Structures are given as structure tokens and as C-alpha cells.
Image 1 (tube, rainbow, N blue to C red):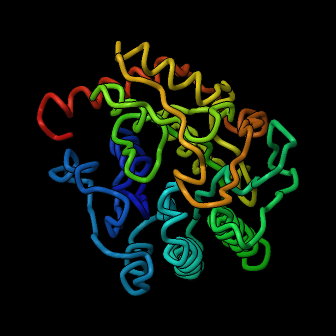
Image 2: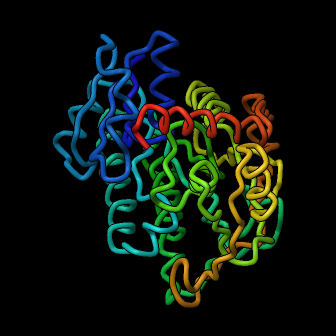
Length: 326
């Protein structure tokens, strides 16, 4: 099979490329390297079945040509990370909505199956935990820039599902909960790589807010395995799926576990949201997925517990420090 991955030089995209190449398929990626990194796919450059294009998904002729060459499309290209979203809301909205419009429009010409990556952020301020795919989405005020990302990804979902209902383009939507593992950067506010790098360097571990907010962290290879299975499933077409772990942990406890596993003497410091992001920043107190639906369709079940995930990230960043790349 020939697979196109937009945002393929990103953290998840690079691991998805690995999975398909290991399976014997041919992989094409497109990435403008705005948040992805060529380092993530450097180990694949010499592979005969790997092809990369450095360009934006907004470039319709390039995207059209790549889609024509491929059998299926994973649309992962998006603005990512709370820090980027707060600092660059225009870029966030335009990147997410325009990119998805281009990919779906071009895929529809030849009816190529498309999996669109959405996010747990679309649940917004909902407190109906665990979050179910058919649950209500509760958005914050438009004056709070943080929710622009959630709304842009919700529009992506509506558009993907509309293409299926109206034009019979086979689409699948996945809501990714916090995905973690080697190659993830803390550059845009990703919490685990940030904590690990701070702990390894002996710097203060910065917990935003009061630290009571809880999250669930899924291992990237578990998540990628689920993505591959969904793409192979005809039953998944036209549906929305949560993908992630349901092992819940508070951010304070997460910081303590990182400190313990690294043997760090770092101090754990709390930073108010207003200082970390912007005045009036709102966060979700809990973010826990109901993963029963994807379990029923493709048998998905997380295999890596949190300590194992943390250890994989610690080993990755320890290696980067030792070879001078941190």
C-alpha cells in the first residue's frame, strides 16, 4: 500500500512512517517543518520506500499530486501545543482549517480514504468524564484565545464527516488524547518532555496552575498501532474515535514521578496560568477518554503504563544530552 502522511515529520507522523515501512508499505510524507523536524525522519531518508516533500498542505497542486500517488491519507498536519496556540492564534486557525479543506478536496477527486487527526481539546469545558465520542462539546468564550484551537479542530471534524455524508468520501476522525514517547519536543508546551528535560538538567520542574488538573498519557506506538488498524477497517469509516490511555494522573503527581525516575534534585515550582500563558487562561480540570468504542471496533487496548512511557522519554533525552544534541 502507498500511504501519504501530512505532517509526517512530526512526532506522531514519524512513528507512523516507521510502522508502515516495517509492514512493507511505501510512505510519502509532506511537512513544512513549522512544528515538525527533519531530525524525526533522518533515519528514514535512505529507505527505498520512503519519500518526503518539504512543503505546506496549503499548496494544492503538490498535495493533489501526492494524493494521486497514494492509496490512503493520514492528515496529521496541524498547529500543535498550547503555547503555540496562545501565541499564534491566526496561524493556528488558518493552518488547521485551510489544510483540512485542501486535503479533503483533493482526496475527494479520487475517493481516497482519509483519516483526520483531531484532538481531545474539542471536549472543551465539558465535565462529563470520561469523554465519549457522542458527548456534547462545551466551548469556552471566543474572547479566550485558547479555545480557537478546539473550535478549528471541531470544524475539521464537521468537514470530514460532511464529505462522507454528502460526497461519500471515506473519512475517519480520531480524537487524540495526550500522546507521548521518544522524539516529542517540549518546545510548544508538551508537559512530559518539558518535565524530563528540566529534571535531567537540574532546573526547576514547572507545574502550571495548582497541579490538581489530571491527564491521561498514551504511548506513541500504542496510538500508531490503533491508527493503522482504523485505516484498515471498513467499519470505522464515517465515525469518530477517541484514542489514548485511561490511566489518570495529576500534573503534580506527574512531576513527582519524573523527579523520582530521573533521580533529580530539581525543585517542583508552581507557575500561575496567567504568567505561563495569558491573562484569564482556562484549563480543563480532567481529560479522560472513554476508549470502549475503538476497543470494540479494532481491539485497541493501551499496553504501556505511565512509568514505562516516562522511562522511554527519559532514555531518549538522556541520549540526546550525552551526544550533545539537547
